Image 1 (cartoon, rainbow, N blue to C red):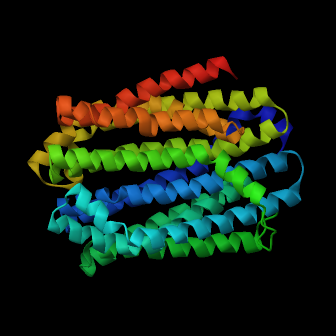
Image 2 (cartoon, rainbow, N blue to C red):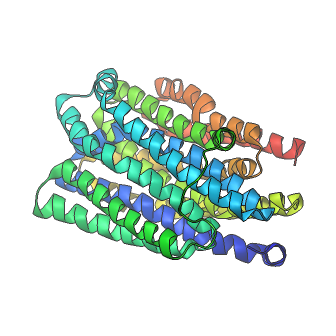
Image 3 (cartoon, rainbow, N blue to C red):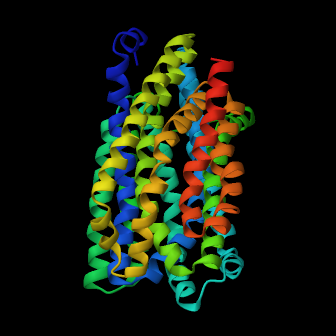
Length: 435
């Protein structure tokens, strides 16, 4: 990475690093959407509801993985900006090993958490059966997914974002193909969908290892000396991402808790299907964040704070425009989209009545998320954590537990835009008070 090139071609480098990351992340979201399509059409709406009830588990894994990985990537990026390549490799190796250990331990813990979670949500017997079939296999897949994502951040940090994009494309295509084989040909139901995810993740892992064995020039595999200081710094620096993902998981649990009591499984299914759009858009935001974070860390480590802030401002404009485009596209295709996953009039009616309300959150969420990424990349964990906690936990939970009881299902749809609007005020306060 060249500082002068970054100064002269800032926009070009933002897109050069972000587009492959965006494609990779959107393709990742397409796996979830494809899973929902096959479950909805080959299992039924109860299968969709069952998978959604376990989403807090997935967010927990993502939170742990991002906490260690993004924190480690930021430290490695600043070391690279200062010219210390040896420290870069040490941080890289420790980050990957720590991510793997944390995610495997998490799988052992989650085995004993299924029953209490399902009891609290008051899921019916059919939904419980689908839940257990799916997530028993996913406990094997999720650690692989987390480690792959961590590796991917360092591949982009090496300056090879297109390589990881190609791996993501392969992952999606292989996953969708296996979904079709296991669901349509072999009639394996939700267990087959989960198995498809596991096999595709393992194939991606092999391709990633090939890169670091044969192609990597900065971040190389090998031995390392564990540093407690680096571990603590990584965790603290990535704490906002952990808070963000955990907050999302807690919020998802709260959504399910409230919807199951106020509306029932049909409401969870409708919320899940609308949530696929939100998830895909969030992956666009995360793609921008992951693509620009190495640029921001590099500029900040090179004492170019104005340049780092300039990258953040430009990226905020891009995600805001992306939110408007997604809103308009889904407004035009809302009826078709609602029939894609289920053929149930009640569920379709909920989706069509609530989608536009929910998607107004896209106008604010990108700016909030990118600013949080910016603060993490520059080592300012407090501001990042406050933004993440506000939009993903404190304000959101207040909205989830008040608005649905006041306005029913409309209140469910209102929770996200109200939360992002309030968080935007906090974000603007931080940006104006301290650049």
